[in-house]
Length: 164
Image (tube, rainbow, N blue to C red; front, side, top):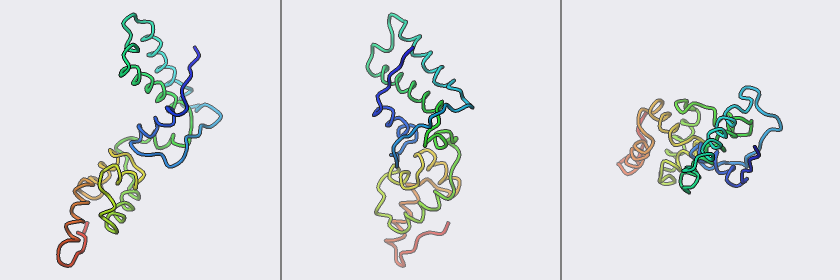
């Protein structure tokens, strides 16, 4: 079976999987990852192949066809080493305390710079979910609540951020 994947779509997939904008272009290593040997890609292509064989295929519906093609791209991203492999392989529950510390300092420095969880996650270099988990684990509150606390503290007399 021969499969063609648009480069633009493939480059957008890791950003969607990570929940943030990529800071550099996607670059694959020349060899396949020996730990997976392409098994995730084979399985995802197997699902696509089976679906294409069905007379009432989900591929006939644009919304489901897009999701199935994203499954194939995710299989490729998991099966072949690239510059985002380590980040995609990290468990959602894993949080980076240094990234959390760095972004809390950025919030304390300029709380008006951030308006959304996505902006905070991008500054931390984490997905929105990993940011949420990291803030709950290391700060004790969700990121938006922390941002509000800092803004409130700045407006209060004395203008000092709350202690963690």
